[in-house]
Length: 86
Image (tube, rainbow, N blue to C red):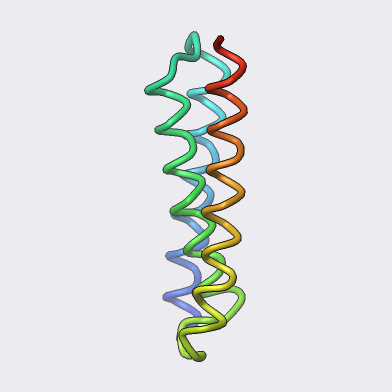
């Protein structure tokens, strides 16, 4: 993997971080915005898992395990938010 590719991904991660910070800081949070922040977080996690943790070329089992953990964590956060609305 080239350094240029990793730099592009790093910049994308920084832009996504600033975007989620801006959404959380400047807007009244609603359910669609929370889902958008969680989707951005899922994409960030996927990029980190595949490229910075170097799981892009390993067996499917390892990728599925780590990505499943990420999705489970985000689902629990979304469930906690949804239950908190009631």
